[in-house]
Image (cartoon, rainbow, N blue to C red; front, side, top):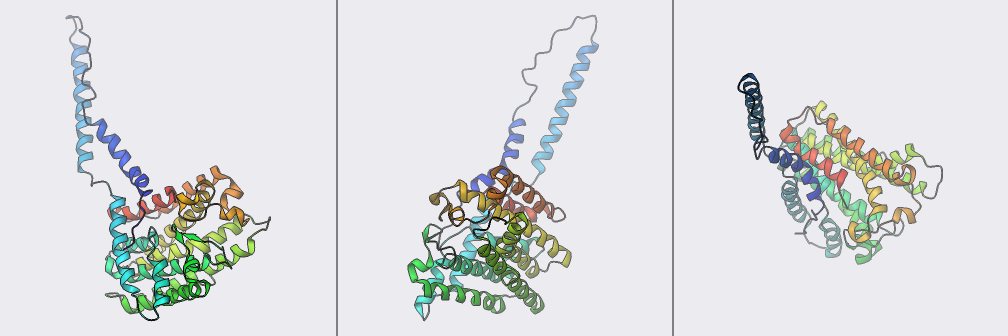
Length: 369
């Protein structure tokens, strides 16, 4: 089973722990300990009684705050959550694509599918399912399908006719290892398998929901989704008049649509209401665009070694990016805005069940690769 790089998640996890640590520290000792009260003249005892009353009230308030603090649920452990979900997802993906004849195509499919990665999309699918009352098993085939399609898009995106990249997830890209012809076919096979897997492997979900999920996924990646974004992205290379509106269209379709599909599929499989599905759709659109804004920032601020893929390739290809149009600082402000708006969509859900989706939004916002 491939390992998952969680180094940058430590930073995100610390965001949730920082407030707890500072509060805990403030309650670890009596803040009035060592307070020197001046001795007053014996003619008036009222000031002493007054100060004692203040101290008693302050200590009572601190004790009440301490009790409230201790009664809160434990801080969500994002790193452990993602490790557990990634392990389950990797196991399911491994089982979904066994080695069989013809071996070369299956080896090529498995090479990219099991190459690691953070499994953000399938984790979002599972988290959305559990948020609306479902369980992991109901959404696992859909989560695997989303990752198969994501892997297909990476294999094809790296081809010489597209981005012509030779590094992905710290390893040689699929066409470098298996050749361009097999790489194209491996992507095609993963695309077909994704829909087959949802149709035959999903259990304890009504046929109507499965059909609805298949339609959502197809729309997310077709000529109105991922493909649309890729085409406009290719056609925009080298153009000077590309503005923010077109750039947003590219990223909403090229990146956000598949993330949206992942979340919506999870909500559908979990039995979410139409209102819940639409709230989660809006959440996913925001984090999908957020993902790409952060990706653009990392492309110009990190090295290839840090990213696990070729850095600066958008500049070389003369692609329009958020840093190019807005600058680094404005791009970061925009990312913060998207993160805030995404999390606002989760306000009406059970906070404990929403914790993974809140943490995933923060991870996407603050990731380092």
